[in-house]
Every structure is written in structure tokens, then in C-alpha cells.
Length: 300
Image 1: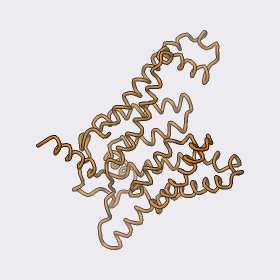
Image 2: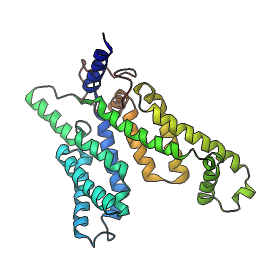
Image 3: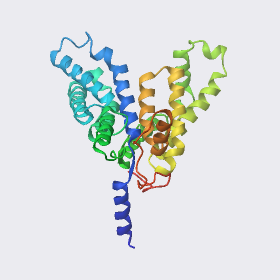
């Protein structure tokens, strides 16, 4: 078999491999909750009500977001959410420079994936209605499946964030612990903190090196399926630490939401089956196996 035929087979497997859609359903729900948590107050408020077109768009965002959250008419609702959020982010944020709309870059990327992928196949009203319809018609409901590459896209997206974050932390001042010391003084101490707690310097140096190594490991480890399932837990530990020690709530929650795409889909599927009723929702027996080494290794 020539290398060209081998490459073609890998590409075909990459495009056709199916896994459980519950990971994307869970990401859909948590992303919608992140939108409500982060933007309900600053967007739908007096801060932008002097611009009628912006106020209309923000209300469209949040009304469609509720439909996407519960998974009702998900394909239509996610398309409306994508269009309205996209106008706010790309036109008013990136083009006109309104900071409140320019910031949610990662949020817009995830919304784009949710709009283009079948994000309502699991954990949704659409799914419940489809199961009820199938029972009424005496047939099996369609399996909760989607193409594996949809989760790969999200994994590469979050890996890119870790790559640039890791590269930003390669300057000498960072490795000397100076920026970590600044964070400590800003959040917990004062300008005299390093005098009374000199041991903070050694801890800052260790944390600086550990953070850079972890972020660069995530940047490359999340790209490969075989390594993704090992390094993803380091990402959760990193963001739980950021959440509790620096109170960076939105960023930490959004990153952990996308990291769900890096957990083996079968694990997510089985976990949800354990905590809820799982009648007629499991993938068929002949579904392609979801193992750690399945499919092409590199997704880039």
C-alpha cells in the first residue's frame, strides 16, 4: 500500500468516525450558561440602551440563547444566536472597537461550532421529542452520534489558546517569578509583602516554570487524540487553581467547558447514563468503538 493510499484511508476514517454526541450537548448547555453569567448584566442593561440596534441584537442573543440552552429547535436557534452574536462581536466589537463586544473571541468560536454541528442531538428537548416520536411510530430512535472531528475542532481551538498563553510566559521576567509576585501583591498582599514573606519568591519561581511547562504541554498534547486524554486533566487543575486563587471566573469556566471536548466521548456518555435515566438513548451496538487510540492520531 502506497503512502498516498494510506493517507487517504486516514482522512476517510477521520471524516467518518462517529462518537457520542453527549459531549457536545454538555458543552452547548454550559456555554449558554456562561453567556448568561458573563453578558446578561453588561449587555442587556443601561450601558448600551442608547443604541437601539445594539439593544435589539443583545435581546435576540439572549432570547435565542435560552432556546439553545434547553435544546428546542436547536439548529434554528443556534443559527440565530450565531448571526446576532457575530454581528455584535465582529462589527461592533472588532470593527468599531467597542470593548464589551470585542472580548468574547473564544465564546464566538464555540458558538460557531455549535451552529454548524448537530449540537441538539443529546441533552435537549429536541432529543426527547424525537425519542417520543420514535416510540409512537414503533421504531428505534436515531443514535446520539456526531462526527469525531467536531470535537477535534474544539480541542485544536483550546490548544491554540494554550500555545499563545505559554509563549507569552517565556520572557525572563516571568521565569524569575516577577509577574507571579505581582499577582500575589495585587490579590493578597501589598508592596511590603515580599519583605515579610520572602519565601513567596521561591514559590513564584516554581509556579511560573510549572505554568509555562503545563500550558505548552497542553498546547501540543491536546492536538493528538492518544495524548489528549492524559494531559486534559492538567488543564482542569490549572483552571480550578486560577478560579479559586485569582477569581478569574468567566475565563476559567469557559476553558473548562471546552476541555470537555478533550475527554473521551464514551466516558462522558457513560457518566451521564449513570446520573440520569438512559432509555433508548445509547449508541447502537455496531457503532464505531470509541477508544483512546482510535482514528488518526494527528488532527491538524
